[in-house]
Image: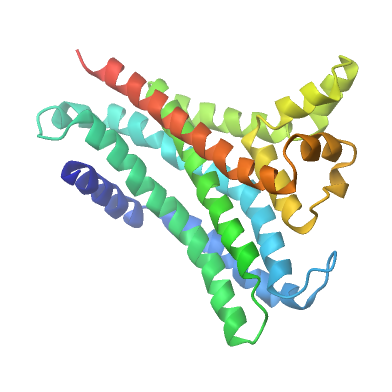
Length: 275
């Protein structure tokens, strides 16, 4: 455990000095600041006003920005160290491969999640100072949703990084994964399913295998429990999970996917780099 935390600390220190982290922090802090500047706390959409409206907008923007940031920066981790020859020094130090790999995951997770959470927490504290009602239940669920979203794509990024043999290949693969998940949110997947005359249950099951779709639907479910905006798909989802059950599924499935991806990445990393 000591080796793991030392590796995590080293990754955190390196990330704090990196330019991408400064941009990453500025993006999410800037989003919240702009939402306040444009007066979203004073607008009303679907009955949501005050901080609720800001959180709804923030989670939607985060779903588009967070995955690609996490994937692109994470895939450079193992692949970049491999190109830099770090492994040659690693094997000569009293640090196990498992401590190094999982330590980098822990350090990178803290670096990725902290700015996103602090931006949302800052908005909440400012709303409290301005006597704006704070929807604590929504804040808590969105925090959990962002936590599993970061973990999910961190695990996928580490898997890609362990497979790719160069930084360029890793970044290209990460971009293709993100683009594929983005394209198969709704239009393309549903169009293919309709042309192929696939049953709605199968189409929706395939759609919910996409973590981006799971996050998007969970965010909608919080302010639209009946999922009216999804049309007929809502009946299948609600019959299968129920409103509360789907919110729980939206936390468990991405977290499991991230853990399995990270574990697969570690097994491939250990097998590929040990004689």
